[in-house]
View (cartoon, rainbow, N blue to C red):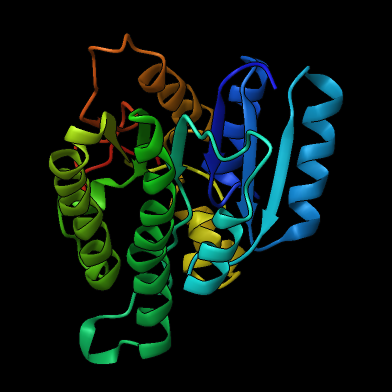
Length: 254
């Protein structure tokens, strides 16, 4: 198998899907993971047909430790030689204040954004360790830099990603593994639709009056980060639409 290999979690939509398309276009072989197997297979078929790359799909939920471990352990035939891991799987659910919070929402956020990232990183970094090389890209958020009203547990989960990224960079340095965080601001994907539990009106209102980031903007940033020379690591990239100054200040033309 010629060409580098990238593993992307949460590749069924949004940043993950866009990154898969961007990297396939550039000749990367891909391991695509996600819960929605039908979407994974459709994406893999499309990319394989369009580009001269190899694509492997693995359908699992990153919240399930055993599924992560078994899937990563099953990689062979060269697929275990992962050059880049993009920890993209993540979500927000709800905007309730703490006193009205839903524990199921909290668990879903923490189990996906924090524990899922940990499970995948541990498994894949041990593969990279064998080769003394690799690059891990964690998709964080401006919510991991600044807290906003109604963000509580989601912000806490992304603050955790920020802290874990810094810790990984220290601990994986002797293993030859680079670690980058990309922290987007307002971006129009399925994010708000999931947060507002399929309420399309509420989700659309988030982006009224300005041009948000697109998934392709993040995919371009991932590609740029992972193609720097060996001696260069982009540690932390905060990227927002030009209409956004911080997590709460957005200029809207309403």
